[in-house]
Image (cartoon, rainbow, N blue to C red; front, side, top):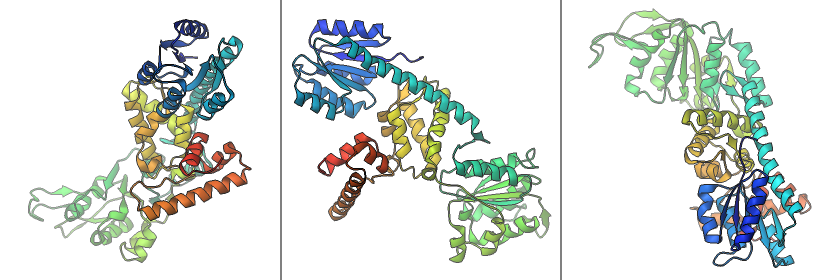
Length: 459
């Protein structure tokens, strides 16, 4: 195991701390000890322990309060409570609050060894899983895209089959799904791979300059046209032109674009002559161009010309099985660029990523992981690192929708009622089994308990 597991011990009895520290170090743990609750909570963010052994009865801040704070601020840290005065009620309360276990003094060292070995082996297993996911991500990468899911494997096969033959392609899909990567793959696997690949962002060009940008102009064609300039169509001659966000093309320009795509004829602004440009055109859009054409906001003839071959990309929420591999690939890439020793994400963080809404798709996932890598100083990205890097939209889960904080009282009440009915129905279907209910809802068991408490649903 490459990562040395960390243990934090908190007790107001120095001799207990000495015993725990010596025992844990023999098992391969890096140990920090502190004499009370306030000191433990102060060192928690900097030390970032994998497991904490905390005495139940300490002055100022007791063990249960430390446990609750750890569960809120460092949810990836396991907590073992210990006490010299055990009761059934406190043991139940500790486990309900999220403790890994509850030990009595004097210690049963075999039991303590088993608990610490479980934590250590869990970290070791997590590292091996992350290495495996990174390895799989490399093997299922295709032209910069990562996908093990059926829909992505089908997409890769489609690109391989079409790339040698297509002249015009329309790539559709939500923002952030990787449409430009598909365009680059079609070019890179096609017969023009050694020719120019030119990108035009149709949403970023000023409308009254767009025609000149795309088709060029002659000297004196308009104020400021001091030189003759070729447009991007001519610049891409014998290559590929990628029209990103083609749905934003000005309607007045679409007729000229149709002629250029269909006949290869380009007319510079201010010129009476047509020029020929042999260009393969790949257009991408997050709009429904069929509906736009029906509404008169996009030329039907141009739509039909661009969509001779249409490739649609599924949103990330429809291929969640790819998230672990995308995460492994992005964390490795980002950590290398930032020179950070981050090996991956914790199990709790991966579960959070797996069930997030991702309205911005793969681009948003990558941005969240980059923010988390910048903000984290640990060897793994924990649940807290990832959660604070998320936007409110992505932090919502797919299973139980969050109530918007600014929603009117009536709307909040209706949403709470709907959430209550959804959770109660799933609990009935699972026979009261919380783990099964959480899985059906697409949330962690801890999240389900928070929802039960928030909506005052009897367990």
